[in-house]
Amino acid sequence: MNDKKGSFKPIFIVLLASILIALFWNSFPWIRNSVHAVLDPSAGALLSWNLTWGMLIIVFILTAITTVIQKYATDQESLKELRKEQKLLQEEMKKYKDNPQKLMELQKKSFAFIPQTMKLSMRGAAFTGIPLILFFRWFMDVFTVLGSPKFFGFFSWFWFYLIFTLIFSSIFRKIFKVV
Image (cartoon, rainbow, N blue to C red):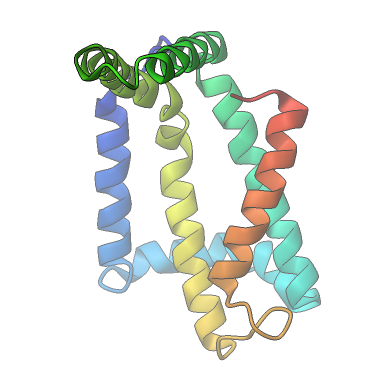
């Protein structure tokens, strides 16, 4: 993982570790207890202070951290170049929409970009995957104990997290110029 070109191996390792953590969260209490020991006094204190504002601050911080990691863990220049090439290819495909043979040839070229783009863009997941799974499991425990409260009267914690992550992420991506 020394270069930013990326590899699927770290992503698969993180994915496997994340699945194992999720599966064994209740089977191995030391996993759950360790996470609670760290997050209860920090993130838990924010939620105890004010559920909505605390959750908003947590989502803000997590999104900021993951965006910064995404920016510096990936080769942004290569990603920009790849996206530019993909855009040009899409424009060319529009020109040949009436020529099925040429269109198929261009689609094959387009499909060749997918693994390369994934390798470049997913590198940040190797650094953020496990911490996010730990947070999600912790959120599940905390909000179950709190009786599954609703944010703004109707959002579950998951939907609140998802919507505000999308909002904050789009803002941070513009600020930090992340592709």
